Image 1: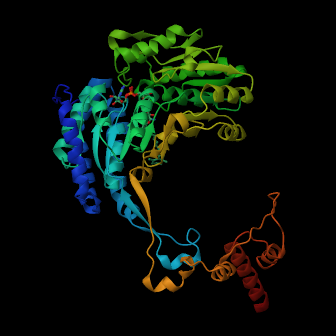
Image 2: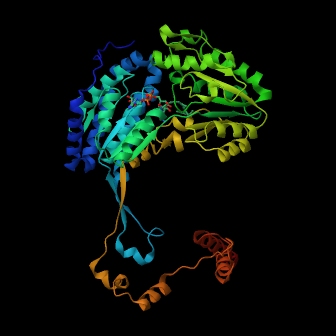
Image 3: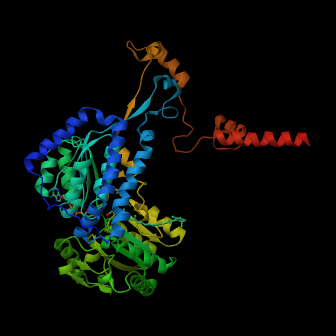
Length: 528
Ligand SMILES: NC(=O)C1=CN([C@@H]2O[C@H](COP(=O)(O)OP(=O)(O)OC[C@H]3O[C@@H](n4cnc5c(N)ncnc54)[C@H](O)[C@@H]3O)[C@@H](O)[C@H]2O)C=CC1
Ligand SMILES: CC1=C(/C=C/C(C)=C/C=C/C(C)=C/C=C/C=C(C)/C=C/C=C(C)/C=C/C=C(\C)C(=O)O)C(C)(C)CCC1
């Protein structure tokens, strides 16, 4: 039974207050208080309890904005962020510690210089969120920013206004308001934010807006993390478990009504198995929606009429045949999970990002053909999925790149909150989640400390230059390549000595273990 809650009407943040909010956040960073691990831990703990305490409002807002079922809202948004907070809290101290740098990064000659990596917060960051997972995709980066010791201004999507207002209240009531602020609004407010100087901008959304953000950031050489979309392919071969592939690919298009940037856009499937696969898709549909998708309490709706009509247009423009689903109703923003069998890779169903419950099936003659098509449609998608034999799945991984990949399933690689997630090329720059979220907002600053007494050892660097000293240093430290000009390894004296004395092992540890076994065996033989 849903708890009755009240959610404030959406209100955009006053444009003239935006520079002040940014300046306040920058000023707080300059107090250096965010560098204290204890301060970060307290903010993370407060965020944890804020999300927990605002659970009823968050659930209601997700229902209001996206008709998102509580079950989905809990696993992919609310509990997701809670787990993020706990993971960051648990590991923060060890991640934030200085890392000593030794061999092999630092040659023995320089081991006295106390090389280390200091983890420093980047500063004051801007986080811009999309509409599809309005809570998770705004707060998960914020967890990273807090963990790293940054201050932040966050901008939720205006397309999910109820979530935006709950997020504003939750953050402003519970976190340090000098360090963290929420700006609500659309293009004017985002532009006002982009006119400020940030130490990093973390953007999740479309590639079109991603470019606007990147161009604006370039003006001030501000680093950006871009989490964008993609035209993600799935490959299904004769060696796949077809029933399972159909069920799993259906799931990819039903969670959040397919408004998931990492779900499949199109399926490249061996032509001989197309009819069977379609039958299995229908079985999966019936299992998931025994009374039809429209009647299901679990299926989210499309966020607004603009996105509804964008998806509808893809279906209106296709020259393919709808083989599953196809119903829609604008008054309810409902689109049925829909599969379209297409016969051209120029089809709207392949060329446009679906970001909804619809996807294409394209029959191919071979995996070669499938790989050629996928590479031509989008060479660097956010995800790919391969359902085939081990060798076929390896070929797909090897011959096509993507931000992440799942074999024998849809986006499992992106369904676990602690493993790195991000795109490649034009589907995204940089990654986050788990330790990667901490790293995303951290500067890895190399520090060296030269002891005063070591000056005589490093005198060689001072003018007037002394060739004799340099030659002596080189005699002590110079390394010789073990390869010749053709790129081949030279099997000289050193190679054969290492081979014989190392008992054929490829590492010192391996050689040690082999010697240990031989010594133990000879000792045992002598005892008998
Ligand atoms: N890689 C990832 O993790 C994810 C990527 N996406 C991608 O995001 C897109 C859907 O999300 P949307 O919210 O529709 O993205 P969007 O790019 O339209 O909006 C994202 C944010 O940018 C702001 N914005 C919109 N137009 C702007 C403009 N002209 N100037 C400045 N700011 C602007 C919005 O207010 C919003 O906060 C899809 O393309 C999807 O593939 C969505 C979720 C996750
Ligand atoms: C617990 C025990 C067992 C194991 C149980 C297992 C393995 C359960 C598995 C549950 C699964 C697969 C749950 C799936 C959850 C899906 C989630 C959370 C989806 C999240 C979606 C997200 C984050 C979407 C993000 C969207 C983005 C970034 C986008 O738009 O691209 C045993 C092993 C059975 C033993 C007993 C105990």
